[in-house]
Length: 395
Ligand SMILES: *Cc1c(COP(=O)(O)O)cnc(C)c1O
Image 1 (tube, protein in one colour):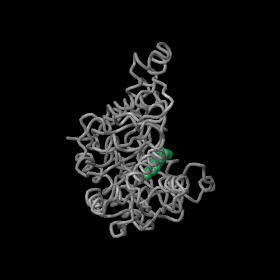
Image 2 (image 1 turned 180 degrees about the horizontal axis):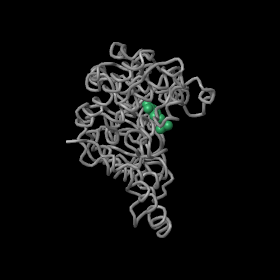
Image 3 (image 1 turned 90 degrees about the vertical axis):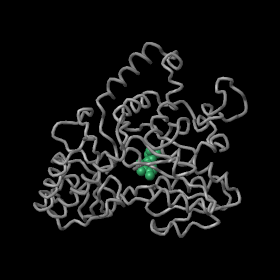
Image 4 (image 1 turned 30 degrees about the vertical axis):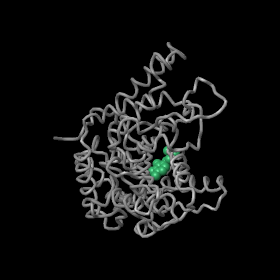
């Protein structure tokens, strides 16, 4: 049985899209759903739509659907804001849970925004907190009794290297540390079982593998037994127990809704909701198998055709997420030349060319064709063209 459902996506003719790990492709239902929310719900119902179209419940409803892909029970996942905000919320709540400890442990492969949010939180708290950064392979050994929270991104955005959620969570909890997983490059890419992991928090974004569209809201999971215990650092009115009672003092909702902050982005949430329709019936283990088949084939084809490139991802599929990276001195220009030929990947400084594998809309023929194009760019040195040398704001 194939996992492929290309017909559910609106991909431009002649494009091989290997960047679904950064911004997922557009599901066909997105346009209709957006038009419906804008024209019929907003346009006709106006403010009544908060009730008549149940906009108010959409953040939780969509959270439950994401939870279904991550082994999280209903009522344990909230959507809203951006991933950076969700990292801040989870981290702030985790530190409150271990008031006598002062260390946040993370690894050097973590995404800059996660680090920046931790640094900003530490400055705000102004109480001698420390962000301790170690190499990814040294995390387990660095889990010590002074660590309040272990904050890790499962899949390294540059290399695709995977952390093992069950063993690292167990190691953190053995030292009574709070575990926070960032699933930005895991949700919609790998089988994840949050319940089995016992992790206290997980966060992630929805515009990558989940195809929610640019700026679609992030998600945050809280282990069910902690939901009514955690103290929200961003105490917005939507997370209040009774937002429309307009009480002067904050009283958090007795549910996952306490992670809400302000008014949800309804149009974007509705698009994400329609994107999740595509995931109905997708077996995450079958998806993972297809992803490894595609990324393994890509590695094989590229290494054979372009020996100049150095594989920057784990060769062992079990240690690799749904992306493959190659390091190349002229990586930026090479990716631009590839894009000109209809193969879209991206570039991360200093020299990483990234290619994402999304088995819902990519097949083996796409992979071969992408490798052929990369070979042409490298062997004919097409990257040398002056127009590929200037870096855009987004790489
Ligand atoms: C993509 C990504 C982000 C982006 O955060 P936003 O607030 O959504 O811009 C943060 N952290 C990780 C690990 C990511 O991969």
